[in-house]
Image 1 (cartoon, rainbow, N blue to C red):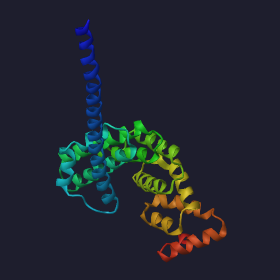
Image 2 (cartoon, rainbow, N blue to C red):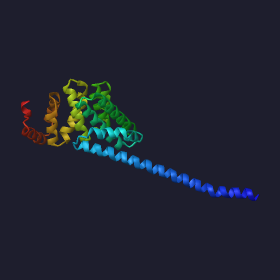
Image 3 (spheres, rainbow, N blue to C red):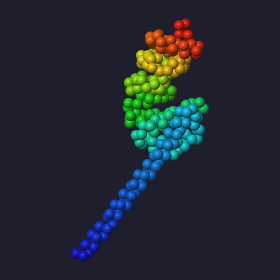
Image 4 (tube, helix red, strand yellow):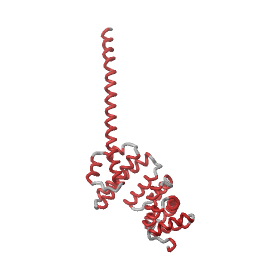
Length: 248
């Protein structure tokens, strides 16, 4: 009886210590994984911010992003900000690879960007910016595919009036219209109407000057329908940049 009690006593002493050790180990692993995740996030976000500010990332830095598995770590989580940053970096690498005529790198970076965007959309399907990025990436890599109009429509539907997204979408869709892709025209008209009515004169003028002629015609139609004061103000801004709408 005493031996049995002694055995139970030993177990009673050891078991809580084993549990405490296991808990401490689990907490240490959790903390370490969190630290690694924060490192991965900080590196990719820093790269994305530098790209947005106009910096050109070095190719060896982009290689490191693949080599240290930071991309895989971010893809394993559902943090949309990290995934969006990763997509930005991968899309920039795709552009750089095209510029230096490195098709294998362009394919690798394009595939990585596609994975990041699609993972982000699986986590946040109502992100109009991501739908726009997906169609832009797809078009750059494979030309205008049937899914392009579906993705563009989803971008219109989920982000109908966010200024910076509308401007990027108008620029992209205007170039498609200029290349003869007529299917984008209805939604492009809607976006240009939003710009003309609510954006600043300087932004509208810059977009107008960058647009191909078919899109400029749409701008002209919407500007013509503006209230008199707004129309005059915008026309003066365009005239200062050498555009006379009355002579079009």
